[in-house]
Amino acid sequence: MAQDTHLETQRPVSPDHRLNASPQDLPPEHESHWWSKWVAWLILVLVVLGIFFAYRYITNKNATEAAAAKGKGPQAAAITIGQSKSGNINIYVDALGTVTPTYTVTVYSQVTGRVMEVHYREGQMVMKGDPLVDIDPRPYQATLDQAQGTLARDEGLLAEARIDLKRYQDANAKNAIAKQQLEDQEQVVIQDEATVKTDKATVAYDQVQLEYCHIIAPITGRVGLRLVDAGNTVFAGSSSTLVVITQLQPITVVFNVSEDDLPQVQSQLSHGHQLQVDAFDRADEKQIETGTLTSLDNQVDTTTGTVKFRADFPNRHLTLFPNQFVNARLLVNTLRNVVLVPSAAVQHNGTNAFVYIVNPNNTVSVQQIKTLTSNEDVTAVEGVNPGVNLATSGFDRLENGALVLVRGAQSGGRNGQSGEATGKTDGKTGGKAAGHKTSGGTSAP
Image (cartoon, rainbow, N blue to C red; front, top):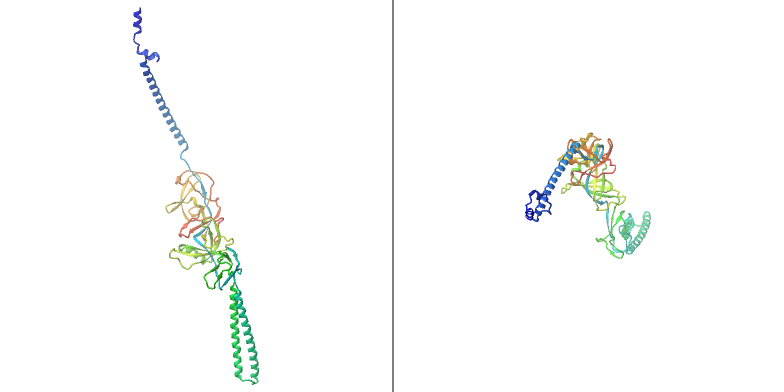
């Protein structure tokens, strides 16, 4: 019996029994092999599941996008629109200008003497006749008194000679004296009259010299910085400046206009029209003053191909300063009852201009146009009727017949509404350029 038991314990285990056995029932050399097989199966299952779910996700996404694209159809381009209108637009010639005073007076001393008093303050506005500088008048007053004394003495001698002449004339009438004596006395009177005339001229000269001691403002304007102080000696005929006065009201602006723009300006002037000129600041953004064209030069500058124009400005608020740089805008003409479209709506294909017309079915069509003049807001054109809706943005997605979606408020005015605008030509180059909008527009003379 013991032998049978030993043989039973030594019986080998079948493969099926090993597979169904737990790790605790397996020998140590088979335990690691068992875990490796289960990990490999687990990884394989996870990979298959991942591939399956990825395929399902991609398939569902493509189906969803295809269904959405099929439901939406072609996408519409989002645009803003403006409307064409009938109105007036001004044509300007732009040029660079410099503020130039009408009068600038440099005051020198016409007599020699010590400066007694300076009456003006630096930068002061003075009126014509206001005192500026006083020079010591005493030497000139003494010279005048001496000349007046000499005149009084010679006038007495002349009176005496005339009395004697009257006596000689009476005596000669009675043949009491020789005629030669009468003629001699007549010449004495003539000599004394000449002496008195010379004395009067001397007195007048000394009076003028005395007046030169009291220097007054010859014009109304603004004085510059003080150039002389009391106590200094000034000399007649020297180049030492006492004061400079510049007239500010009115004042002028000199600007250069291209010779290409000269014919249209001359055409307006030949019909007696007074042309308006607006002065803008250096940045060409703020209008400073409005004036009128007064004159133009008599020749073209061959170096620049321009003609100098001069405009007069009242300068009521002293906003224009001498030698200030300004941008001048000369109003040449006004186009009336023309079609105005938003400048943003005008597109160019080489030398051709066109616009996109927005149709009632929310599509656009290309319309060729001809531009007359423009500014940053509106452009005067031919080829479009008033009251037409035009695309003003989204041009990169537009083509003839493209579907559009209008967004935002329209610009360019209501149907049939007329307005005024400003356009200009660039006087610096002689070509057309964009301009600045003037509030409410301006009318041609």
